Image 1: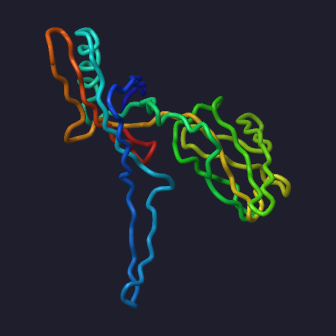
Image 2 (image 1 turned 60 degrees about the vertical axis):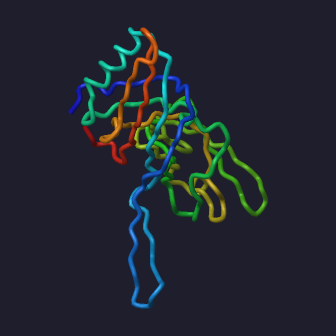
Length: 207
């Protein structure tokens, strides 16, 4: 296990592609054409591809050293570029008068960046909730796994027909892709550009 989970911050200079690589399992039934599908993870898992540069020689050496340290087997945190923040309230789940845990679509949240609300779909009324990690009332946030939990009380459990929505900022726990994770070229004297392919991992208990 790596003693320090390092964070990589950069500004992509080409278009950035984010593609879902989530696993889904299907179970067939006796009747032809009927299949039940199951998501194997509570939230999507992504693969990112983007370019950086131009880089000075010192910058190229720095990112080369970062890659050499991690290669393809050590994970690190990446700030996500434009995908590192959801700025508009977005659906994370729906209440059923008993459910208390809601999975945020990302892990490794910035606790100070998180806000949580519920929306009554019948009336359109919204209720803003304070997410406190200290006393858990009326909701608590577990930022590393990305889970918000409401307090166990009749007036803090999200009602049936109410949507749970949130805004947040996050990092992605990634590795350099096994096939084409890191590429660097000198395109003119002493100026470089690179291509990075990062793959998010679905679990938090990884190297």
